[in-house]
Every structure is written in structure tokens, then in C-alpha cells.
Image (cartoon, rainbow, N blue to C red):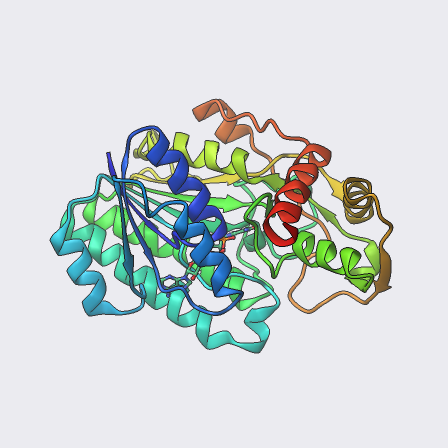
Length: 332
Ligand SMILES: NC(=O)c1ccc[n+]([C@@H]2O[C@H](COP(=O)([O-])OP(=O)(O)OC[C@H]3O[C@@H](n4cnc5c(N)ncnc54)[C@H](O)[C@@H]3O)[C@@H](O)[C@H]2O)c1
């Protein structure tokens, strides 16, 4: 199979690409290597992929129409996995334009490319943030998600709607994946686990929002990769009968939550990190941030029953693996 992975130098994209290459697929990776966080970490992730014969890297911005047209017209992809996006809820308050460019304009170019080149399956990253301030846990794909509380969340919900229109009009199979707080080795420096680890090792207080009264469904990156691979291999089909919030009778379109399906209090997450590092954190207890939500938990019964998805890695083990990677990457 020949897959295009956008956001290939990113946390999930690099881990997913390695897995696809290991099982013998061909991967064309696209990334603009932007400086939202440390570019050398993106380059280090890419350095693990570049030596592989079946891997090709193109430095390009998905919001560049001409560039995207060239990439799609020069190659035939069996699957496209769109992970390139401006990520992060908090940053969308300071820099909304980045979200419009990458997440809306860029996604539009991906859809156009898939349409004109007859791609077999488009899989794209949505987010648990589409659930906004819904309070019924666990979040189900059947829930109403019409009330985003950040531009980031709105852009991801917009992707789901844009994908439906293209799936309906042009028959492109599309699957949107709502990722729930992904963590693990080669992770993202703007996310809590990375910031906490850096703070604890540097004897700095770590920022703890909503004074620690947060609950997250933390999903280990290998479990995410396993779920994405299962999804890639089984293109979406029209559903029988009537439309559902996560299925369509008129289009090969579907949405899945992909999480660990466990509620973990933030303070337990911090304790597990302290244990893995063998060092206590100093806490800087702060109020809730705009755009953020107090709790998430994924209902993953659809992904379980349709594709046999079973997350395997418990938070304590995942944090230990992250810490082992962090220490070897930064401190040796
Ligand atoms: N990590 C999580 O917890 C999480 C949760 C929910 C959703 N997601 C979504 O999953 C996807 C991957 O997330 P990640 O954690 O790997 O993020 P990441 O920031 O590490 O990876 C995204 C990559 O896309 C690239 N990129 C950004 N804009 C681009 C553009 N216009 N053109 C080309 N490349 C561009 C970046 O350089 C980066 O390497 C994103 O769409 C994100 O919104 C992630």
C-alpha cells in the first residue's frame, strides 16, 4: 500500500509512519516543519524515517494549493492520512490565523487532491475537543458536538463536515478520528507531560490548571497507532438505514473516538510522573484556561466492535516509557 501521511514529522505522524514502513508499506511524508515547537525534535523524528527505502519526504505546506496539486498529480495514493494541523487549544486563542490556514484551507486542498486522484481512503485527525463543554462522560460519537469552545475545536468539527460533503459528492471514503490526549515517547513539547517533566527535572514549579481539578483520557501513542492502522485498512462505507451523528446513509463517511477509555485525574497523572522520575513536583496551581475543558473520556465501543480495537498500555507504564525516552533523548 502507498500512503501519504501529512504531519509526518509530528508526534503521531512519525510514530504511525514507522509502523507502516515496518509492515512493508510505502510512505510519502509531507510536513512544513513549522516552528510551533522545537524544529530539531521534528528533524530527529524524521531522521528515523529517512533511511528507509520505502519512505519519501516532501517539505511542503498543505495550505499551498499549487504544491498540493503537484504532490497529488505526481503520485497515486491508496490512502491519505491527514495529521498536519495547527494543534493545541490554548494557542488558538493567541494565533487564530494559523488554524484557519492549516486546518481549514489546508484540509480543503487535501480533499481536492483526494477527489481528483481517486484516493482509496482518507483518514484524518479530528479531536476530543469537539465535545466542547459537554458534561456527560464518556463522550460518545452519538453526542451533539455543535458547541465548540475554541477555534481549534471548531476547525476539527468543520473538517468532519467538509469530509462528509466530499464523501457524499465524490464517493471518497473518509474516516475522522477523534484523538483523546495522546502521550508517549517522541511526544509534543507543548503538552502537559513534556512540560511537567522538564519542570520537575529543572526544579521549577509546574503549571497545573483548574488547580488540578481536571480529568483526562490519556492515550498511549502505540495504542493510537494501532487504532489508526486498523482504520486505514478498512475504508469507510455507507451505513445501512438512516443517518447517525457518526455514520451516513448517503456517504462513505464515519467518525470514531480513539482513546484509552479511562478517566484519570490530573493529580494521579502527576503522581505517576513523580514516581517514574523519582522526584517530587512543585505545583503552580492556576485557574482554568480559556477554551480548555475540565474532563474527557472516550466511549470507544464503536471502534472496539467494528475494528477490534483494544488499548493496551496503562498510564503508569506509558509514563515510565515516556520518561525513559525523555532521559535518553535529552540527558545522554
Ligand atoms: N497529540 C494529541 O493529543 C492530539 C489530540 C487530538 C488531536 N490531535 C491531532 O492529531 C494530529 C497530529 O497531532 P500531533 O500531536 O502529532 O501534532 P504535531 O504538532 O506533533 O504534528 C503535526 C505536524 O504537522 C505539521 N504541520 C502543521 N501545519 C502544517 C501545514 N500547514 N502543512 C504541512 N505540515 C504542517 C507540523 O510541522 C507537525 O510536524 C493533529 O491534527 C492534531 O490536531 C492530536
